[in-house]
Image (cartoon, rainbow, N blue to C red; front, side):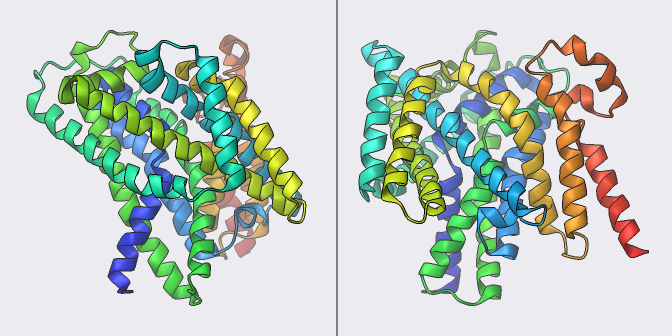
Length: 421
């Protein structure tokens, strides 16, 4: 196959893997709330929802290993626990969220049934497809992603040229930080460390043996995928901003996305978008459950029983959590993300830097400090924030839930200076 063509195919495939339909509900609401400050929010959101995830792909291009390899410099035990946490959170939050999005966008508006019924049928089908590993899902995914992207691009273009021009003022006090933290909710950084390994395995199966050739292909594909994500996310935030005056202040994320579809495409177009998003959500859920079951199967030396049991447990969790509203699931995810996302970010960055700057000592020191200084951010969403005022006042950026950033950077620099002596 032509080299350029293969890079573009890999780039679009990577974009499709990142492009979880559940993520679509986030940017439009950000745009509505940010109003005139939409461009500041875009910068923050893109940092954690596009830049960091694509850097994870670059790190995989360098490592060319598995998810386990991301944290093995800290210790084998840490890396094993980290992998288990990644997959546990995947089946507990983003997977059930796809069922909730499907219910609120494509089922309840037309049938008025309960969310528990939707999530039960949804994850029964997910379990059946995961156990039987049907190729239908991958085929559907290949067709759905281009359709959804085309619909979104039409929405964005129409929004730009048909909006009234009345844009609300921002409701955010720190739009850049709010964009960063909302970017956590895409789970794309976590997706990056998982998806990158999938890309490596796929290239190996296709007969690619040259380390440098694979590195070049993955890196260029990453740029293509990142550009696509930036255009879609940025365009949806802008669209939300342009129509901000037409939405109620307390509109939910689903209401904003559906409303934006109706205002630009009409009722038929919005309904078609809802159905497409629902199908894409389903393929995402099957992918998460299958990937998690594969990981546990590997731990138990290829046990089919372990695979089926994991798929069943993931589906039961999906039924329970997926029966709640989308906004509740997003709120539920915050403490877990405040704990795991900083560690994931530093692991990505440490795996990118040259090996002489990313020694075992540096890995251990930076990850430990990141973990310690993330604790107040994590606790801030579990216990009353006023109980943490004292400690947060002495940690730089802690009031923005980014208290780990400066300590991690200082430890990285300090340990590298010590190693030079």
